[in-house]
Length: 591
Image 1 (cartoon, rainbow, N blue to C red):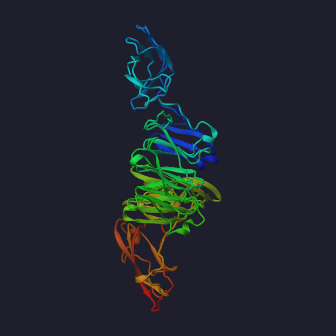
Image 2 (cartoon, rainbow, N blue to C red):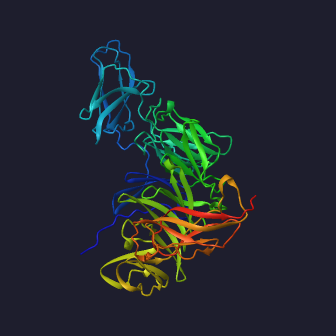
Image 3 (cartoon, rainbow, N blue to C red):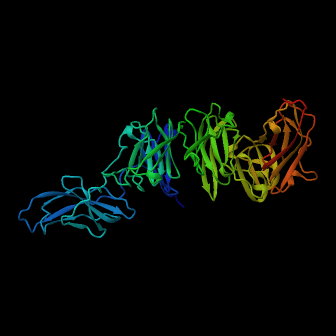
C-alpha cells in the first residue's frame, strides 16, 4: 500500500482579491482575469491533475525555423538586382496559423526568364501546410503554399497578394495597467475587457484560438479584434455575456449589444455596438437563463431581466424584483447561480447571509421570489450538474455549540416515492443501515448541537449530538439527522372582485390542495384553525406521499382588517402545495 502523487494547482491570487476575479470555462480549461494580475488559465488533465499557468498570448503552432533561400540566376544579362524578403508560416489541421518566421532576403532579377528563388525551411510538428509570403519594399503578401511534406518553394516571379499578409505578433495585455478584468466567450472568440488604461475597451481573440491576439494588415475576418464603447459618461465594462448572435457588454453606464455586420459574425471590420438600456450593471456576474439575461444594476438593489423582443427589434429591460422589494432593501447580491433541473430557479445569496430563490418559468410567464432564512449565513452559491440534475452547493457559516464554522452543503433533491429518503433538514447527514439501529453516527460536525432526525419516515425532535452520535426512539434503516427549519407560505390580504377593499374580513373554510405532503398547519393572522387539517379516519404519518389530496379546515369568529392565510410545515417532511381555496366572509361596510 502506498500514496500516489497529486498534481495540485497553486492559485496566483490572494484571498483578498478573489471577489474581483472573473472567469469563464471552455471544456477542460478555465480562464481568469483580474485588474492586478496577468491573465491565467486553470487546466484540468485528470481528477488529481490541475495546473495554473499564466497565459502566453500567441498561436499554439510554432513558426518554421531555419528559413533559407537560394537565388538561381542562369540569365544575368541586363539584370536589375532586386531584394526580395521571404517569410514562412505553418498552419495546423484546425486552421490556426503560426506567426511569420525570421526573414530570408534573396537578391535576384526574377523578371528575366529562367531566374528564380528557392526557399527552404524546417518541418513543424502538427503542420498541415505551409504558407510563403513575399515582399519587396512593401509589407509581405501571400505568395503560395505547400503541403506538410514539402519543405521548399520556388518563386518564379510570382506576384504577391498584398491584401493577405502574415499574422503580426500582438499582446495588448503585456504590462501592469493593461491587465484585463472581464472575460467571456462569444462566437468562438475569447473576449477580454476593462483594463486600467482602457476601462471601456473589449478585445476578442483570433477565431477558435483563444490565446492568440495576433492581427494582420489589412485585417482578416478571423483576426483578433478590439473596440471601445464610447459614452457620454464614465463607462467601464463590468461584464461580458454571449446571448444568441450578440455579445452583451454590461457597463457602468448601460448595457450594449455588439453585433457583426448585417447581424452576422463579428469581424475586425464589422463591429456594431448598440446601447440597449441606460441602467448600468454591477460587477456581479450576469446569469443567462434560457434566452434571458439577468443582472444586478449598479446603483439599485434590484434584479433586472434583459430579453430580446421583436416588437421593438431590440432588448427590453424589466425589474423582476418589483413585487418583492422588501427582500432587497439596502441589500446586494454577492453570489448567485441558475438551477435548471429539476427546478427552474436562480439561487441568490445576499450580503446579510440570507438566501433567496427566484422561480422562473418563461414559457408560463411565472416568476417570484422566496426567502430562505436558515440558522447560519450563506456566503457563496454554485450549481454543478450531477447525473442529469443541477445540484446547488452553498458555502454557509454556522455557529455550532458556540463555535463559528463554515460548511460546504449540497441541496437535497426532491424525494420521488420513498418518504424515508426525503431530506428536509439543514447541514444534515443521511445514513443507510443494512441492520436497523437506533444509534446514529457521523455527526461530528454538529457536536453539541440540538438536531432533529427522520427515521424511516418518522420524526424525532430535540436530539443533542454527543461524541458524533444521537439516539433515536426506535431502530430504523434510513436515518437523516440535521438542523431543523420551518417552511411557511403566507398570502396577501384578500382583495374581492372589482378590486374593492373591505374593512372587515374573516376566513371561514380553507381547502389546501397538496401533493406528496405530510402534516401541515393552517392559521389566519396567527390564529390556528381547529382542528388541524388532516383526512378524517387516517393517520397522517402513514399517508402515502405520492397521493394528491385536500386538507380541509374550518375556523370561525376571527375578524381582521385584512385576513392573511398562513400555511406552515414545522416537521422535516415533504410539503408541496399546489392550490389554496378560501371562503372569505366580509362585513357589509365597504369603501
